[in-house]
Amino acid sequence: MSLFVASLNSGSNGNCYYIGNGEEAILIDGGIACREIEKRMKRLGLSLRKVKGVFVTHEHGDHIHGVASLSKKHKIPVYITPGTLAAGNIRLIDEHVRSLTPYTTVSIGAIKVHAFPNRHDATDPHGFMISSDTVNVGVFTDIGIACDNVINHFRQCHAAFLEANYDEDMLEQGRYPLALKNRIRGGMGHLSNKQARQLFLSHRPVFMSHLFLVHLSENNNHPRLVRDTFFPIAGETQVIITSREKESKLFHIRNGGVSRRQTTPSLFAEQLSIF
Image 1: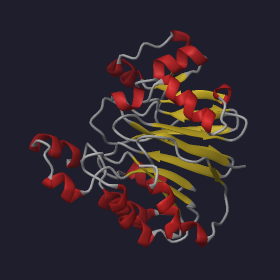
Image 2: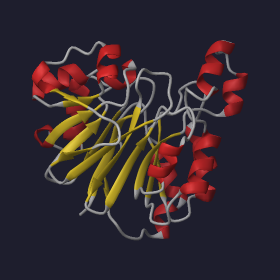
Image 3: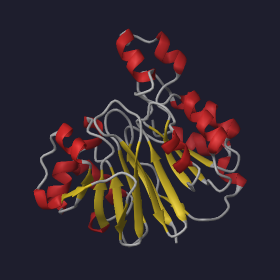
Image 4: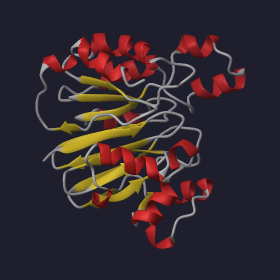
């Protein structure tokens, strides 16, 4: 089996990730408007009829903005912890609510979704590992540090959506108030380029074929800094820098090797052109 994945949007203006196997699919978060999710999936040749669930990481607006309207219009169940549902004040139809429990697996056809707590300044934040047979895809975003849950699941992934939110120098020298800077880098905020790089270097499994770098800060990061941080260490892992303005390509994740030619500099030139 294999999985098809795409970033529909990634950044403080909205986050939404597609993962499917050809028969069923899920979305992780719905932080952009329903109409934008529809348009971007259509451009990728994807059908919302196959989306059988939206899984919510936490209640911040850039992760839940479009969830209620998407669920209502397309009758899609929303998997969410009770704490996140209450904190986000998401107006969902009762019959569409599915209570999410950490360390349990939800089956969506042949897709298995495993939720685990992580560290972020939200009520009940969670990450996810999505599996289809022997292929695993992880979503590791809005995490203050790479805690044991993040590390243990990252080690199992053939592909990962990994936060690279800020460059430490840009944040330090920027115009944010000190309290906000400390919130971002204080262990319950976001992961820096340097922290994401260390996680990748220390815990990347040999079979990881794709790394999607997500949730780049508009004010405290730049795609070229992320490229320069990760390209020299990418090895045989294809690195994709996601956009805060449009969807990525659709990628096919298999349980198998990946050619070195996938990590040539032209990949980054292609990806950077979307910013």
